[in-house]
Length: 298
Image 1: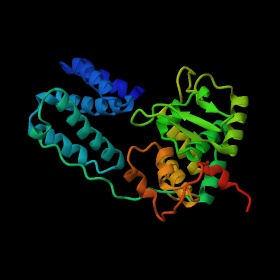
Image 2: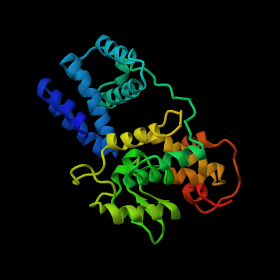
Image 3: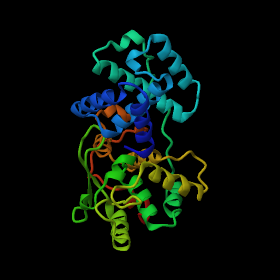
Image 4: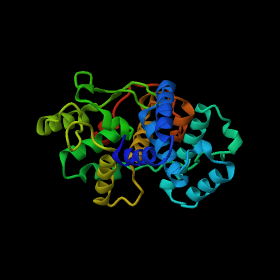
C-alpha cells in the first residue's frame, strides 16, 4: 500500500475495535475475487476513513449514520471527493456482500456514469510536453505514458525485463482486470529507452523509487506530469490519464481500428473504447506507436 493509505488503515486498526480482523477478511475476499491491490487500497482507505469518523465498523452503523457520512463526502464538491465518494460506495457494497449483509438495506446511492468526453492533447501540445522535462527519466516516462497508453500503475510496475527491443514491444503484466498484454513501443521510444537505461542504470524496475527497492510512486508519476505541464503553454487540465486518452485518440485519427485500440488499451469491453470513436474507419493494420507518426517526416 501507499504510505498515506497504510497510515490511515493502521490508525483504524489501532482505534476501531474489530477493524483489523475486518481488514484481513476483506483482503482475502479481494484476492480470491481477482481484484487488484489498488482496489484493496482504495476500498480499505475509504472504509478506514468511515470507521474512524464514527469510531465504529460500518457494519455496526444504521442507515441514517451512513447517509450522514455519504452526504458529508458529497458536499466536498471537488474532483478528488467524487473519486473518494465512488470508492466509498463501491467499498461499502463489497464489504456488505462479503459480510453476508444486504447492501440494499442501507440504500447505497446509484452512481451515474460520467458522460464527459476525455481531455485530449493536440499533436503540437504533445510535442511541447515531451520536450518540457529536464531529466531524461521524466522525458522517457512521459513518452512511455503517451507512446504506449499505459495506466499509471502499469508504468510504475514495469520491470526492465518487460522490455523487448528485438520485437520493439513491452510486456504489460497484470493490468486492470489482472490481464497481460503486449504493446508496441516504436523506434522513437525504443531509442529513448535505450539511452535512459545506459545513462541511469535502473535496478529491476524500469523507473526506480527513491530507495531503489520498489518502483516509482503514484504521486511521483503524477508530479512529473503536473510539473512538466507547468513548463508548457498548455492550458488544458492534464493528468497521467490524459496521456492515455491522447494515445487512443491519436491512434484512431491515424487510422488504427477501434478493435485493435481496445486490445492495446487492455479494455474488457468495446463500449469503453467507443468514447474515442469520432470517425470510424474500416480495415485493420498492424499496431504501431503514435510516437513514430508524431515525428514522421511529411
